[in-house]
Length: 82
Image (cartoon, rainbow, N blue to C red):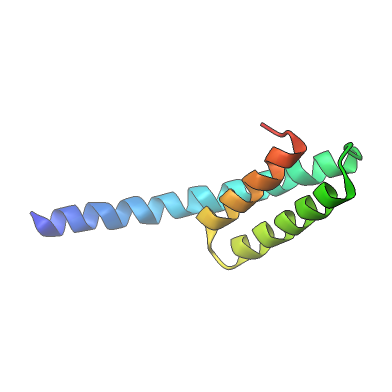
């Protein structure tokens, strides 16, 4: 019984990781599109958005998709992306 539970948990994680990995680029693209429209942000906000965007991409490349999603969500929040 314990083996089946462990196997089920392992399979859940294995199938969830690619789903998270696929959404990181979508978030990055949404941020890039918003930045291309020259949003009305303060210089500090613009710097923060660009730093969060870059950090999110690095986390994505490192396979840390949950952290990437959270970081990119902060940038989207500043930009008003829902």
